[in-house]
Amino acid sequence: MDLIRDFRDASYIKGILGAIKSESYRPINIMEICGGHTHTIMRFGLNQLLSDNINFVHGPGCPVCIIPKERIDHAILLSRQEDIILATLGDMMRVPGSLGSLIKERAEGRDIRMIYSPMDVIDIAKKNPDKMVVYFAIGFETTTPMTAALLDLTIQAGIKNIFLHVNHVLVPPPINAIMSSGDISIDAFIGPGHVSAITGTKIYEPIVKRYKTPVVIAGFEPLDILQAVLMIMRQFKENRCEVENQYKRGVNIEGNKKAQGLIKKYFETRDSFRWRGLGDIPESGLKLRDEFAKWDAEVVFSDILNVKPVDDHVLCRCGDILRGRIKPFDCIIFGKACTPENPFGPCMVSSEGACQAYYKYSMESVV
Ligand code: SF4
Image (tube, rainbow, N blue to C red):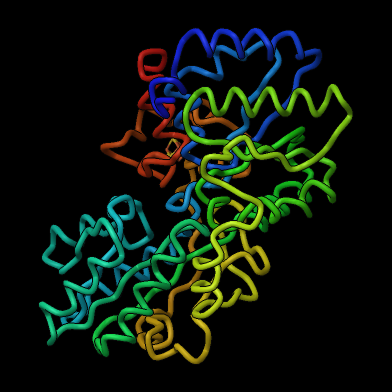
């Protein structure tokens, strides 16, 4: 089976659409947690193909979008130190904080490196022994093992000039926050494929039990998502409510034990982490364990990181989008004042952001 061609095959897609329609007897709200799924839904017009009874609600699973402004300010303040090189992934460069953005800081001469893999930090540190290299780490359970592996290698190799600013977060806590807020009504979730490859499927069991809401983990091709929708419809029809795994080619029950071991070795949960749009969520973020504090940029550079929480731009609705309360078209500056070239909020910048997906794939209906 060809994993791209066959999972986009029009005849398979037509067949599964027919099956979904024949099982569909009432309108349902399905939240896709992951921004990667939002992009597949918009790119292939799945929201339009299923518009009769299925409403896709976009969730909080974009790792760039959920970083609050004050943590971007941390990155900016670090980059302004003469003896620091700041390294981060590309999507973070244009996200606005209250002090500006990293791309503007770089234009003003700060040494900010856009990297493709956390391991690139090793090379930067070795080539610049007289500088301190701070890796601004973001991401859900998917990318945390790579940050842990970077620290592992740093320690093993005795490299003294690498530090981590950790912004890693977990998937279940924001889902609990959204469901217990009562803001929106969600009938089922499409679970994130990449996160689940690390964690396994069992992390969703408490959500299913507590909220009586099915979770079906899905891959990232259109057929994956449609098949997940069909599995959800069948759970409703058969009066079942469970965690199911559509993405068996990438995910199992237990997940990646080696990656989980690396995470556990170096990280512990924070008491609380502030999410853009969702506020403080208990035990939703990770930090380095105390015994690794000398690599923790928030500890080492605490004297320059004393910034207060900052609200979003008054017109930006990213928070409401991340909570599933509105869609990008409901933001009055979408595609007007706010565009990928001039973003007001992170949802327009990130390659997993809902606003960027709507802009990229629905431009003609907006502009
Ligand atoms: Fe924020 Fe722009 Fe999206 Fe509006 S369109 S919610 S301002 S990112």
